[in-house]
Image (cartoon, rainbow, N blue to C red; front, side, top):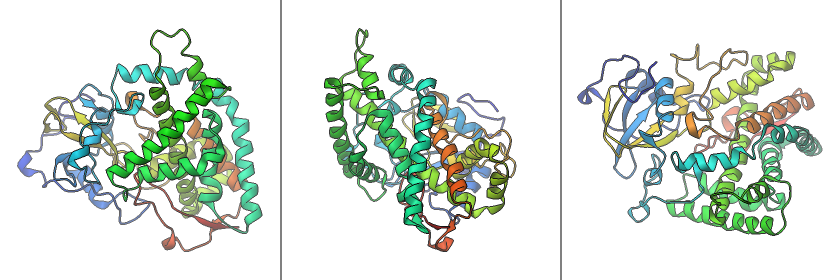
Length: 419
């Protein structure tokens, strides 16, 4: 399918007067394991449709796999800048609609600025460093499983396993004291909660930024072998030095993304396997399927359920629709990962599925930098969890599970399990 910012896939353009009226993003689903029915209907009938924002603005929602990839692959037409002016699920007050410029926050900038920041980090996310972390990840996972066993035969998988594992890993990678976890976990939860106002989110990020700035100063005075110190030391002799503010924001983003997303995938992935016992049995019978299982669980769950927001930089025809310059465009990863034009039986969990080329880590220049680390944590986490507790099961009825429909990162608030 054509991935240029024009009419895609040879589909006949849909006249604006045939499009349904702009409506809010269909976020909460009837079945928590699947996209909302309305989202699936839009993908089938109006793959580029109008989206109504809480403040009354209108934008666009892109739902087909090929179109989502096309949007994310074209930062020239669909920019990551100025996204803070829009929020598909919260009204943005007029007084905070001016774009929030945070130097170093590389997910909110376009090339070439984005490339400069990403280059600094790629030099630290080396294959050797990621490989060297595996034995330590094994130790961290084993330690948390020991804690679960000591609490058993009932434990909260989220608090006792899914959240501590990636938190410990990212702390070790960055050089953050794990004793500070309550501080950064609370600030992160506030930043991604739909119950937080825009001001609340900014306050949470400011608090976390202050914590990270103190850490930058600490590592400048007393470096170690962790990633932040590596970033600082790499500035020696560099043509363009990173400021303390840039260092702070870069590492703050890594800290948030590095524990919040993987934690929710560990919880959701475990519940998905328990809910599909035939798939869990397949994994137990053939542990070599674990890498493929990780990819399929990422596709099936799509924890970034709101989607990725971009802003059109110019008037453009896309998917048969005219999108004016300045319009916000939401690329739905959830809808794309369940697109029947790309995946056979997309609503079925199949850990032996071939060619699981999902977009859960995004696509294009902003594709998740820590994807290999996340995959490693999930691969080790799922395998060791079910080796240690082969009869693991829910300790409560499925209908009592508390889903994170109030958060921008989908997941579970708690998951009581027993064995």
